[in-house]
Image 1 (cartoon, helix red, strand yellow):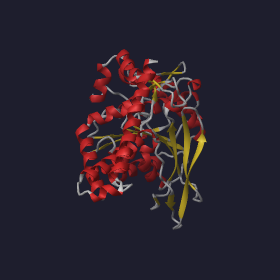
Image 2 (cartoon, one colour; image 1 turned 135 degrees about the vertical axis):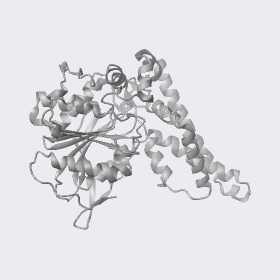
Image 3 (cartoon, one colour; image 1 turned 90 degrees about the horizontal axis):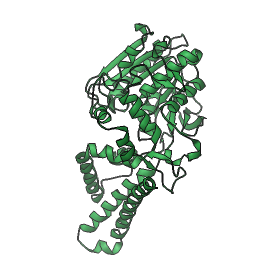
Image 4 (cartoon, one colour; image 1 turned 30 degrees about the vertical axis):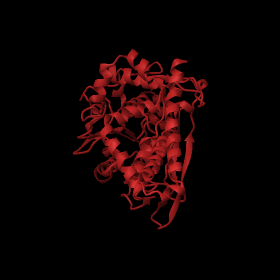
Length: 424
């Protein structure tokens, strides 16, 4: 009950700040106050508007916001989000462009389960939609999953990926971004040994901690420094009475957000101060740069306690995947069994979360794979987000990944070059 009270206390603080922002905005916006030539009322209204939006977004799942797609026929086609596989802890969804002919590449984009929703990859999805059929792992917020659904740890996560790959078939190209890279590698090895006909054509791992010790960072140092008991005591809470997952042990999204923002507190503080000034000057809009970024950044989700703790213990502390000693459902996964899936790694030279060396370690583990089926790319000057969502991804990395897919497609035919479609 102590953990549940803490969870509800955090939600109470968030809710109170949202209410205070709404109250300040409403009160300072009374027409009567416009007669008073004191800027304090303008400041109060602007502060309230920014504060209300900020704390409201923390519990809202963002929309994909991809409504139409302009195809080669010059027409705008509607985009639908279709659920292909529905599970308790996450779905496999298809970003479907209606009325468009099937594209030559079927891509499974494995989104991170690390605090943010899959919509964090919105720009990545848009860029791939140009000439790919895009499928995405849409992980659910643990606070909304009843306790009766059971546990969800790194082994369950891996088995979900196995089932998703089986559903899509062997002509699939898998791209794993950040956190799921090691588990996606394990899922591919699992299929290579137990169901080789379901293996994907290619596997691209982007900025993931396959071997966290290859290049230590602040993240890996933290994982080494704290004990599992300390993590469980300080990070884990029970979902409160407001949500369907009441009683479930989780690593709360609000606690994760506090950690994210504390790493760059000065930058975030300045960003919100500047936004208040812009609102006062009527220079802000609903979809300006600040709101576009923070609407996504502030939208956080709870992780199941068992997933968070098993990730720290088995991926970071014990390095089970890096040592090729990972066990899934009683079966020891052998990464050397990957012999027919082309594997590519992508790293950013300035990545301070998964530093260069951590992801490329996957290629060394694929001892049964021919060198001709291995590729790696180190993007100069790119940070963590830039390698999958920024200019580096659009201009340099994405073309390399598409070429890698073309070269190693199981369809055995030359794929057509990228077209000039666009998503909106």
